Length: 414
Ligand code: PMP
Image (cartoon, rainbow, N blue to C red; front, side, top):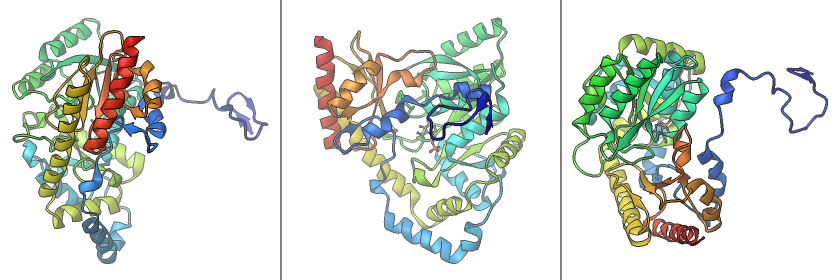
């Protein structure tokens, strides 16, 4: 067979015969460090504090099972058929209720249902970003978003955060510098609530400030909010989108409040943007899964989903407490933040330690974490690691931190 650079003869070889044929954009597609870890970290003897898998132990599987069976019995001919490219109208109406606590108001027509919010990240980037455009992203940022930006050949520029989230002065300084350099900034990507990986939440008083700066520089804000309803104390803060309907695209997901296996997320976007998103989605997938959307819709209609989110919150709070206590008891040489919701603690290691180099030794000691470097595009993060408390039991969390403390102590002795 003729290939990009010759003739293929050696059947079964592991050489890539198509090396000369790939599009330039694939150069930005690298395997995430976290994905590579999954195989090792999922061995039962390893305490994995690495992945961010939602904990489904609180989900009433019998309720879900009955409603799935009922769905096929009563609406199978619709649920198993192609559907609207924008998403099931019934689900889009119900999504309005789900966004109400974060004060996002919209019309069902403003919503585009996607295959998880991951697809929404892809679609937004696809319609806005040309190679070489700048995307601003928090330092650190969600690894899956960085992967999307890279795959569209965006130039990711990180903006500093502190304990109150993205720093407005750092944002405006970065934008002034980029403007001086003649760079085109297309998007500001932010996870304002219970950040992945940093665990911090954008303070209420900063929200209008960030929007004012973005507006002044003509930058569209991409607000990614999969954890917004998983706060442990008090009411959720108003979403950025609730202050500005033209300047913000809001992304939501059922992955953390129901189940990720359905792969249902959504984008709320200004009218004209929404039309482009639908066209982009139709060309990618024709339509989101009818079955998944109707399953989510049925669950929302028949189950007390707010109560269920309350159960998830309690489960995660208990695990957050266990992790913070274990860190306090066993990692006196490190520092970390105190997440008020979500899944993650961001740990700063003692001087001189390198979380990426240390990982193989940690895995040998049967504990895994996500090294900080994966959450930056510029090589920062060696002195940080992300610990997830969402999945293991409190006892396993404590055991994992005990093993981690042993590894860190050994590193410090070398
Ligand atoms: N954004 C953030 C910040 C995430 O943490 C995740 C999943 N870990 C996603 C988006 C993607 O979620 P999904 O596609 O399952 O909705």
